[in-house]
Image 1 (tube, one colour):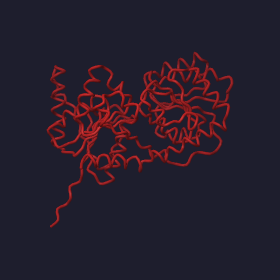
Image 2: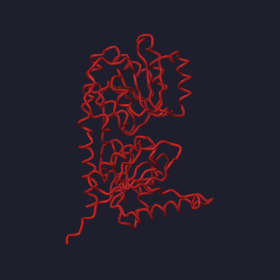
Image 3: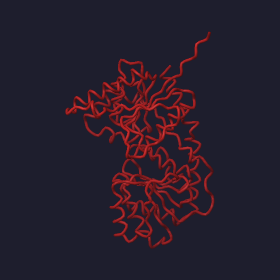
Length: 370
């Protein structure tokens, strides 16, 4: 009697499933492999009862790797060693063929804890590498440990040069697939006189620059409003600043909403003003929606991976309020040009279509699993 073939088993290792860009990418990729017939396990260090998480599709097992209260010591070093040991036991117990990890120290943990197991670790850097590994020690550890991984995934060519030559030679550039909600025909009707942005309300996103540029153009374009979707610690500051700039009646902060694709598709303009990003999912989704886009050039090269300046969007220097004001003035003042940028932007749907991008990940994983 022929024995049933064992399913290939892929694990994903991430801090939590709280709603964020990296977490959503992991859940979507995990679901793809599940649908392709793989056994899939999601290993997270934390589960926050008071925060909203992404829901895993049926059939994906979840394992928590953090220490329980009874396992905690008063010593940080002892706790660290216990976390390593517990994660190592997870791989021994679950026996995945491959584990994909992401974000900072998680990559170190995945490499170290899979040693002397059958699990092959693949590390990925989804944000700005200099922020994920900011100190000299972290940088040294990345250069030392990454060559011991079975695979190293980055999102941009520019990001490679943060690492040494040994790491660079092992790197594969793989994009994130587009959220399926944004795979649809571009809206071609008259656009709402709304400028939109999507992102956490924190210092890195630099929404202050957005407000100041909008305020400078407020009298010239009195019918336009600015809506920033997201939540964060700078909400009160931004609300106060809007009041100081006398634009509070035209600035809206609705928080996190479930139907961003529907809310932004008719907008006249999308802004991303971050100081740093990896490859921004919000920017990808705005381009896929066919919006005229203005984005800052981030150190990772994430913006230039997506936008050819003047062809499918406009790129400005990070932190340059005057450049943002001029770019906004150009696109608001020349709707036909703005529309041509949006039409070109929508073509990214084909480039980052889930069926195309997910296949690239699958082929890469298959090559490692062998």
